[in-house]
Length: 341
Image (tube, rainbow, N blue to C red; front, side, top):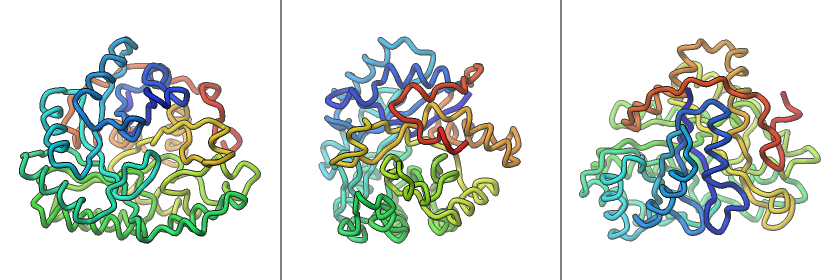
């Protein structure tokens, strides 16, 4: 029924936060046909052996939900080539992920020459799949502004211009290198960035996706008593930005919805290291109802939750018929949407 191309399972040293088995179970009850895992775990998904290990875990889960994997890009040319080989070998390897700035997991590639090497190597390998990019330019982040006593300062520490300028870098690198794949801008949060993506479509294969939290929430939630629970990367923006994103989504300027489901423990959220990330898989059925209430047609919802992502990833999946459960909030230590809708 739905595809979520952006999910963080934590099997490995962080399995206490989320596992492939549990995420697939929640996804099944929420009505998903497929989820695609992200690679910034411990250890990160960079090698063929990591793929094989995770596919074994998924197979044991015996879920009707398709489990896909993104492999992380590094500045090591041999690693990039190994990832391309794994993409060709395993249908479950759906694409690659480049962190153009540090986020959770500390596998950011922040040097533009290293980023350039990734695009050039993918071109030389003939890769024509999806390259997902987390766009936040490291040099424009302002970590000194972050004050955990005032959670809303997280939005100041990771300002809109960091996303915008990183996006401009990625478009330039993709075009100059002759990259033949699809550049996908994940969890886009700034309306100006959406405009840049749509202008670039005339010259290259580029897509973008938005998350439920960037469409629904605004930075005022971080001024509440539970503000630390809403710390994510990129941060929740202003109400005006959220409204503009929703307008662009309705106009078809944003390709699809992805949750960026990334559970953390309450202790890690509320105390050092004040982790970024919130659970979202459980909320998806409620979010679909919210889209309907906002006037989205059933065809728009199908395109935003399944068709557009399937087309961009070049993956053939039959939508799984299911009755999504609206009562999944207790699956995680906290439900960031509980008192909002």
